[in-house]
Image 1: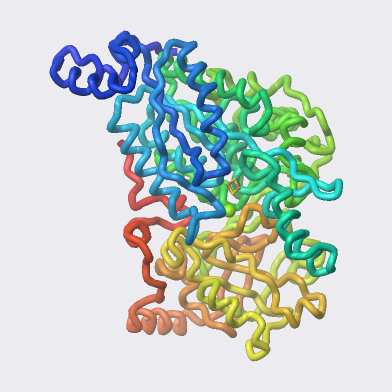
Image 2 (image 1 turned 60 degrees about the vertical axis):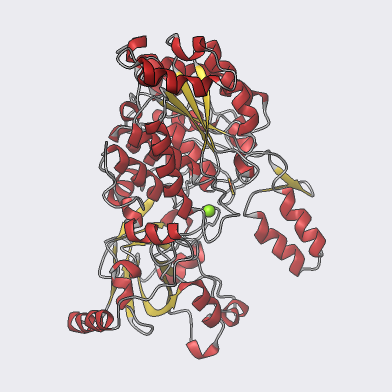
Length: 585
Ligand code: FES
Ligand code: MG
């Protein structure tokens, strides 16, 4: 591996520029003023940034404030100097209208920070859903040595002897409340029981998914993703991470060396095996774009669709974060995949300088009920399919969560297996949905397909997690629980519904969904991967012309300057929801 010398450290341009001692003095004096010494800044120690996402505003990542002390110890032990970097806060459940809007803002600001200041290498403090892609995207763009450190999941939640998991517990609490087993106070207590400690969500939602995939991409030390936040191993791996980033600077091991096309292919396979979130393709396609690695939703289907589900975590399964770690975490999953020859690139290099094979080959599954073997998986084909047609160019569906009832009702016609047709009922945004879903005048029945549009990156800035729609209450009373759902928005990673999601381009960006009308026939074929409105081409052309005349698909006003800029620059979900042209530097 190519080694760099002290003279080649990036930070030397600030702190020890032999051509310009005057500027060196100016840069230096202000970093000395809080007690750093000239020895720490000028003697050739790598300056290691710690991209700090922990704060009071970001409870999921707040424990990073503690862990950073151990990272510092590791950096100093390896001969580096630490500069902690505040990152724009992103908290998934607290940010209105959606934390997704902040992913690109945190990305932009961290790029500017890493580029413009004397940083030789960076530790990325990841955890809550969007913090992981935001920081990996920034590392990809600036392409200085970088290593990710998960904050770790919360401990398992418990209520009356049963595991209660983030997000999914709300459904159970509603049932208990409706049955009169708990009152309003009890409702709060049950929901709070799912969050017993510091850390990120303990279910297999977007946070566990993205932290696991950061490790799958090779950007974390092996085993790091799943160690629960309060465990001693979490502090220990923080120390190891601090030590390792200093070595990575000397080895000049950069994000583009680790996050290669091969690494993304590995991550796609691992996402299927863990039962990862439908938000993962958006984020990984986005990270890839910032590295110039081609990646799209076809890759997700081709590489990921046939990979089996091995990890038995809520919402789809039974267990939670502590169990996942004790069963062996990501390395055990990778080991199982390798045994079955299902990891596309075992020789992909990772942050510790070793390959996936070297890191994971000897890692064993410690609990086979939590991590299954590939010859006895939970679901045989666990990835996504990528649908295309006149409704949209690309939308994904997690076919592994299709229920038996759904399959029997919609996908079991002997003459036309794996396909269904229905009458479209179209909603423009979540407010329209809630206003109309229970209105008997809409005539919604079991032969309807519910559509949600105006919920994509431009329509509802950042995209809303609203495509998973419930049936009208009059149908629920008749026992009809699920209708097919399609939309240009997203769905929460803690939801286990087989909706057709992330439709790109969205209605507000010239997508075919804008031309759909309630009452149109629509057809979906999961074998051919098609999604179409059965409307004449001439009629569609007329509707398109009318839409132009009326000023285009209407969207609500922006509520902040960033919402406006974001809408002007953002690309569709299938292109990673990155900003226009995603330039490389
Ligand atoms: Fe932050 Fe789940 S809400 S990790
Ligand atoms: Mg979410």
